[in-house]
Amino acid sequence: MNRDERGTDRRRRFETLCEILRPDLLRFAFWLGRDRQLAEDVVQEALLRAWKSLDTLAEEGKAKSWLLTIVRREFARSFERKRLEMTDLDALVAAEAGVLVAEEDSALAEMREALFRLDEEYREPLVLQVLMGYTTKEIADQMGLQQGAVLTRLFRARARLRQELGLAPDAP
Amino acid sequence: MIDCLEFRRRVGAEPSLAGSEIEAHRRNCPACARYQDELQAMDALIGRALAVDAARIGKPAAPKAARAAARPQWLALAASIVIGVSVGLALWISSPRISLAREVIGHVAHEPGSMASLVPIEPGALAGVLDPEGARLRPVGNVTFAARCVYEGHVVPHLVVRMPQGPVTVLLLRHRSVGKMVRIAEQGYMGVVLPAPRGSIAVVGRDQQDIDAIAQQVFNAVEWGG
Image (cartoon, each protein chain N blue to C red):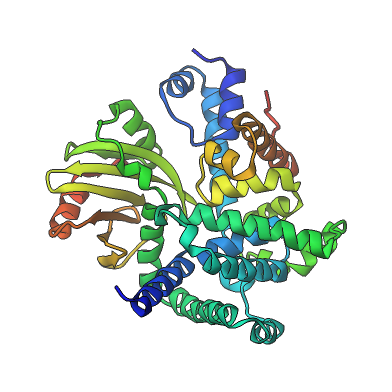
């Protein structure tokens, strides 16, 4: 394979990865920052970084995890850069109503708002588990935590959601 | 045997948890069984809630295009790919058939470890994965992987069945109906999604010439309870 062909092949690989994984990356970034513009910016920057370092991706089976890590780091950078102050949750919920709205399904809308209000330390592992299908070990690796800490956060996340939604706490 | 406290601690963190200890406790404690069922139902709702429409998030904004133009050449190239992908994404979203194929392949590709084992799993473990769907798998091949996975915001059974022709991944997509058979051929994977009495069944393999016949065998082996 000559240089041009390698370049084309590299570009095709990247396009395929983006095409398959971009929706999940956007959702992940959105639930990290609870801001669709920030999510779009973070994913765009993350994909640019990913393109630059595509050769470091050893196995395409690990592409999702690799890209989520880049999105996570990019989000941390953006958050630091912009020094976002997200204290007014009601305003945030209102600002993102376009994404959160679930017409004809009040339970879904209620859950979205409850998730929106969940602390980040609980929201992120829950997103990785329920939306991304990660095991607790994979979440621990992704977040740099012990597996036990992840299990505790996931347990508390659900307990808080049950509480928020007015379900019996039923916690041990 | 684990007590109620331990059971609730475990399933509170992982509602889809299965296994002999969990199953044994469920049989002996209806309250805890109900608690796990409630958590699984809540997780299905959480999954749907988190699966916001990506198209609503990722609307391209004008300032970014201007910013991209000011970048070095390689960045501009990458940005053009991203924009191209956005267009592709819009087309993809507008085509449920293509979207379904890619979602299935995306899920299969995300779990390459599922193909690693050659050892048949315990019948109890398989039942733990299929029972919540009211489904059963008649003998058709060795099942070497069974898990309840999150797919499109729903918890679905994900199996690897080692057929005489080779291993295939099987997803029971109860939430996803298809009007007719949908073919999948991407990234070296080949498969079909078949309409089922409840939703659909995806059967995906690599390098199998007769995937249609294999899928039909798997389809015939799945029994749906009342």
